[in-house]
Structure formats: structure tokens, C-alpha cells
Length: 267
Image 1 (cartoon, rainbow, N blue to C red):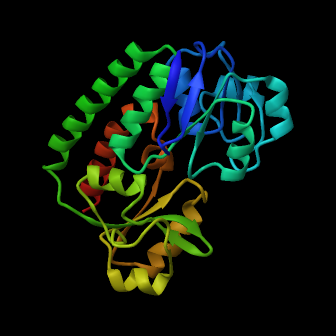
Image 2 (image 1 turned 90 degrees about the horizontal axis):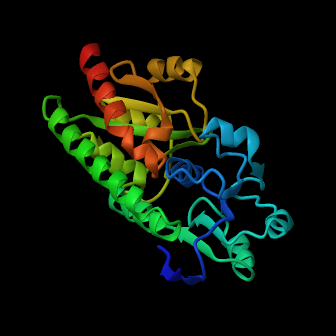
């Protein structure tokens, strides 16, 4: 195959098309399934829940931050896919001693599309990757048209309950919020700020979004936040569409359009 440079600037050599792939990132695992690499993928994490058949049948090699290194070594992969934020650097460095490890670093849609193209090239699925990216771009262009019919909204997106945590302007989730035409009220902060109910109340968001992951917000949390923010709309949202940066991008615009319509109907 040749030399590749991952999204952290690390160079690796892949001598032939990989036939024993391990993915340590749920969204990239889903991408590999869309590429049709059922036989080639031999290991995933316990959080790689899509596709369901892979989750039930593939060898699990631990969690994203608790990789079972001896198990990975025993599987003798010829390519490992990881992510800078989701995986632990010391574990990646240990795996790199023996195996080619390609690490993504995704902060926005452009990074995600670049990741899709590069993974496609490494796995012999360049044509499929190009077609996927073209269709994703087409659907996001359609979303831009849809959102112009809706009022721009000021939003807070929560990823954790105790402590209360939200998302800053340098995150992929922020990029997805902006794709909807909304304004993230924590866009001037970095990564995942800790906040509290009083601060959010002072910001007076139009919308408070409670994500399904990593903290699994439920109806009881929604009711509690409605009491705190009686003048805001509070929604439970599927975090996979806001934070999974692989082939899930294909379905995200339709989900966002549905949210826009739901909010408009509640006005």
C-alpha cells in the first residue's frame, strides 16, 4: 500500500491492503461496516454498538480508554484505527510499537470528511469513500436550505449531569450545532466546560439539549431542567447524530431537519 500520515501528523507504513483491522472508535467502526469490511474487521470496542450484528459477533478488545493490549497483540492486526480524543495516548503508543495505528483528530465536518477519505484509501475502499463524501455534502447543502426557513436559536448542549458539562466552540458537536443554524452559548470556551444551573439560567437559552451520550439523559432529567428553565424549550436529543463523525454524517441532516421542525411546532 505505502506510507500514510494520520490526522495527528504521525507517519505509518501499511505494506498491503489490510485484512485484519481493529477499530477502537465507535463512529469509525460504523464507517468500516458501511464500506462493507465485514471479513476484514476482527476487533472492536465494547462501545461499538453499530452495526448491532458486529456488536454481538465481533471480538471486543475492551473500552475506548481501556484497551486490552495483550488481546489486541494476540489478534495480530495489520491496521488499528484510533482517535486522539477517544483513546488514551499511552495505549496508542504501546500498540504502535508492533502495529500500524492510524489516529483521527476530528473537530469539524471537514476533518470528518478527510478521515472518511483517508480510511477509504487505506482499506481499499477509496471509491466508496468518495461517493459517501459527495452524498454527505449534498445532504448538508440541503440542510442549509431547510434551516433558512427557521429562526436562529441560542442553544446549550449538555453532555453530563453531575457535574453539569457542556461543549465549547472547538468541538465537533459545536460544528454540528452551527450546521443547524444555531448559536452555541458556550462557543467562546474550549472543549467541555463545567457549568451549572445558575449560569445556564442567566444565559437564557432558547433551547437546552440533553444528549443521549455520554451521559444518558432521560425524561426525568428533562422534567427537572424544565423546572429550572421554564422559559426555554428542553429537548432530549440523540447524541450519535451530533458526535459520531463517520458515516453517521449521512443521516445527520435529516435528523437535524426533524429537530428544526419539532422546535418550530412547539413555538
